[in-house]
Image (cartoon, rainbow, N blue to C red; front, side, top):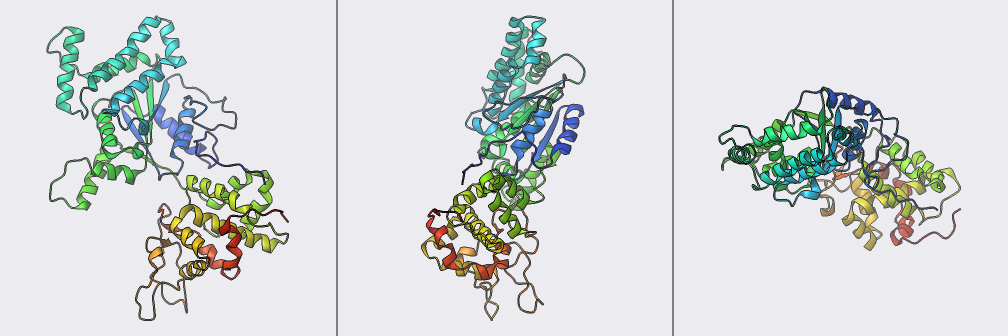
Length: 461
């Protein structure tokens, strides 16, 4: 079977039906009052970077070929003459003493390569362009003197800047004014021009760096003609802010969380929450079909799963699972009968899922093949309570949650181990449990031995 591994690069190809939302947000970004901050919120692996890259592309922005996938023709994008876009990977600069300076330097670099900017300065001179670009670098250098800026320091730096550049001591203009004028000079001529700055992976930065960048945006870059699009995992970023903001010593953990949430709300008042895939199974099937020689086996997966909700609705996790599927699919002969093909697909999926997402379970299972019987019993509610109502859940299952409301016995009560309304974004959900219950009678320990050993089948039936 030909092996095609899926990578984690963002893509410009819309495979999740985002086109309508992209178009609406494009209009909002082009016409909203400035300054403006738009937050693209979603869990890690939900597709935020791809979504933001597609939004950037719809605005006429371009990305380097080695950082984004593009398999279809996007040359028919109608470029806006009033918008220029900047992309900033915050994670790459998290160890800078002042991340906002790194942002200004990246803005300078990308402005200098833009055809729109060069076309404007062709009417003047390259010297004028260089002088204007150096304005960004100079302002960044001044800001860089302070690792964590505040309003008082900005005022003092502004007065020093005015004295050195305008020879008018006491002038009240601030660095923000000079920064605004510099950016405005670099933008195309016309009405409603703006720079749209995409800041990705802010939630992957260490807490101090993330907080510094947010402070820098609030103090220095809250400017006319500027729109910022922040890609973030909201919960992770709130946890980062919690570590940095000042709170009373007697504040409860709940109070600290609310203060951090309000801080983030003040900076980012416009929020778009990235929707989860409506059907994880269908998206997973498309990934499996990328291996054309395995399309028949992929169809067996869909026949086996049907309407069962058994996969995490997270794009990155589904890609990783598809890669493991390709590995395990070659360990067991593919049967000729349809019913056996369905059971084959379930076994391959279970082995792939546990190997990829639950290392502790996999190692126990790999060491003792009969551990599988304990997994099945736990999924079916037989390891939750004893006759006296005492919780006897195994230690290895304490951190995991089952996905569905399961009725046992006469169905009159809800088992304590079941989760009726799980948050589909939680990483501790054992998504495969319903499929295990459905196929329990066909999932014997001995049938998984080739998968546990990882030996390759020599011949496909």
